[in-house]
Image: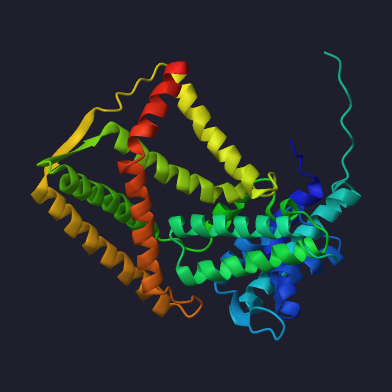
Length: 125
Length: 252
């Protein structure tokens, strides 16, 4: 049985956002997105998992797919960002930053510094 | 970067074919399905060229991948009916032509549809479906012959298990019996449904810019030939197959 690592779980939860941000940089096709994510250190357990998400983003009107005729091969499907997608990406970025800040504060112990309270002492029963 | 060998190319083709068949059954629009097949095939080709495995793209369960993608592509139940209609046309054609041939040759006033014929029809349909979906096994079983052998072994094992569980079948039991007029009605219905199937296929091909048109003559020839082969199997081979089945089940 395969046990997912924490980073895999984190990536699963944020993959749609990462894909949208990748497409926002420039129009690209599926395999290209996987390569760009891998270059940033985000390796997918199954690369194909991007396609259902791309379908969902397309269904929501955040991106659109279009076929590009290649000179030395068959057509290739590219994806580009739509205005609704750009707006959604801004919203997700703000949401992520707030979330990441909160997690960081907790991990660094800043939260306990702010609420400085003496630690519990063990009591005998 | 290395070029995929012939086996891997076949694995990719079988996987894409299995996904396409599944998406058609799930009711994905033809245009979308064609684009999905194109994307999947190109991704698999490029991944293999970069030295990755098929499992790295599709995960441990390709059928689950196909279903996950289908769910996001707004499937419509009625669109999947096209494949069901084709299956129905095949079944009706085989039954009506077998009835016609036996009534003509034997000068019999009626035709009897036996349990054996029902099992042969259902079994063949299921086997054809399983063999196509056997492409989902591609990441695990490399050769096509191996996948087909696995599916066939599975089917034989199911029959043996059912037999061991005490299931008995009276192969010659008559399920239905009908006379000439019913055969003519069945033939007319078959021709009507076949025309509807051809019309649907041509209509979908014309409305979809991503698809290539399916030549009608080729489709009709393939259809008639496959029905003819099945008729021969039902009519000529039935005695031999029937005796073989009876003997093998007796031996179990």
